[in-house]
Length: 110
Length: 116
Image 1 (cartoon, each protein chain N blue to C red):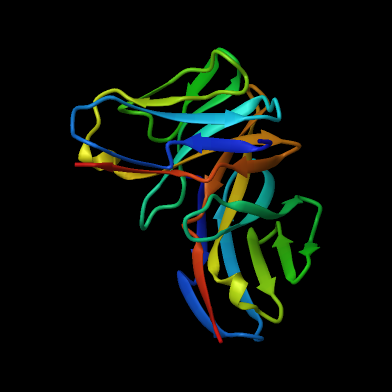
Image 2 (tube, rainbow over the protein chains, first blue to last red):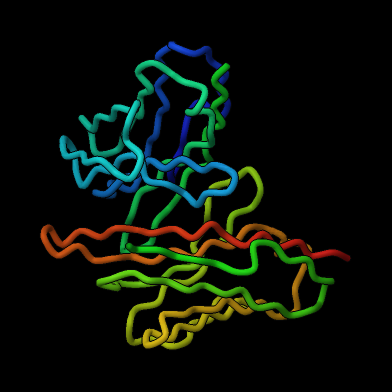
């Protein structure tokens, strides 16, 4: 399917577990992003990547790890999930100055 | 500090009415300003993007304005429809000169409810 997809769409996990959220885009966009969206906050940037093997921290990177071995994939890993990481996570990629968002992953950490 | 503030936080209007959403920003150096629509349970979708030199841009019933002097933008929705019920997010890009990349600063959004 063309576009940007995320998996899983919903995830429930326990405190201390490792969780990986997947993001895949079919446009070969260079820039990809991970955001979290919480009530009362705008979208906050966790990490971004300018190209394969190039990643950089955003506004709220603590507790998260990313990798970008291939242009089309940008997985986000919560190494040891905490309740404060309960949120909706959006992946995005940018082409021609327009940012395209995935459908989001709702993560609940118990 | 780079900030984007939107008002009102929430708004309820009747179907067919017009409304205007506001966005004030303190972002430097300014690159462009975007308006996104986010339906419940979905990712944001771009409505308009405006650069420094653009004052007005339309996308169907959506018209965005930009006053770069006062650092204000508005999104006007004409003849609202039930499907316009969503959150509208203002996003300002700050061009970071050291690597020519850009940084996006998001507003918290305005939640619009259109009632029949």
